[in-house]
Structures are given as C-alpha cells and as structure tokens.
Length: 204
Image: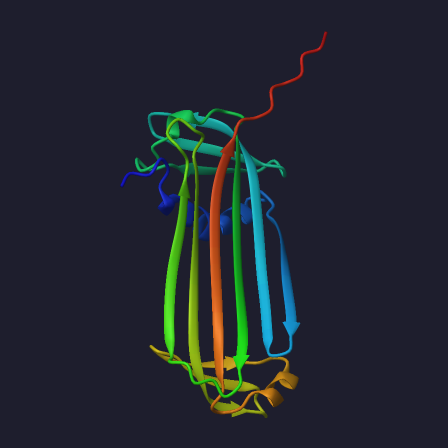
C-alpha cells in the first residue's frame, strides 16, 4: 500500500534528525514525567521540535527548515513522500515524539513469559499537507530470577533473553523477590505534521 508520506521518513526524522535539530539550535521542547505507585513505576519523555520551511527545491526534493533560534537544517525528502508538491515556503513542520515505560510488579505471578508487539499508523489523505504517525507498543512479562539487595540489580528472564535491571531506588527492592513477575509496557510514538503559515495581516 502506498502512503501519502512514508512512515520511514517519520521514524528517521525523529530518531536520526532530532539530535541534529538540537545541535542546529532548532530548540526542542519537552518534558520528563516519572510516577511511582505501590508496585509500579511509570516514566514518559516527550519532545517537540518545530520550524518553518524557508526554501524548497522541487527537482532535488531539498528542504530547508529554520527554527526559532534562527539556525537552519537541510533535509532531502525521498520519492516515498507522495505529497511533496503540497509543501510551500512558510509552512510549519512539527515533529513530536514520546517514549513511555511502565513497570508493574506481579507478586508470585504465574503468567507465561511473553512479548507482544503492536503498531498503529496514520497517514495524510490525498491532497492534504504531508503528515504521518506511528505508535509501537511492546508488552512483556518476565520472571524475577535474582535480586541483589547490595548492588540494586534485579535479573529478569523474559521469553527471548535475560536482562539485568538496575533499580536506583533500592527501597523498592524490599518488595521484589525471586518468583515474582514484572510486566513491562513500552510505547514509542512518533508524528510529523505540516501546516500552512498564517497569512500576513494587511495594513490599511
């Protein structure tokens, strides 16, 4: 199925280009939130980067984007971006990314170890400004096979591999024992959208 804008572009733009945007002083904004409940820890990080298109080369499919700090970033949109012709100088490009992880302790859990991954996508309709979004959710259940109160390390055996997890808040360790299970839910969502610039006000 052909997408109006490739999701590959969305993933590359945020995961690969985002550090470049920060270096180019197209300053990202974001927040980190951590919540702790009894037997559960949830953390989420969001990043938003926005800039205006200052130049477009239709033949080479080259874009120049300027952020609020005045610095610019150059990008080349591959042929998979079907709505490239809809872009105009002055359009605002917004990159959004969120990553969240939730860990929940299951005392004496007996569920089978498993790992389930799902992905949801959205795309622009034909003729609209390019946009795309992709959200991937990974849910896993692992067995607690070792707990080291001194080092703060917990060993988790999942369906595919064994992982040593460092628990910085050692007070949590008193509630974790061999034979317990941990359910982890990881979500990574990425979205790119483009909107037209507001028309300049006319002076009468």
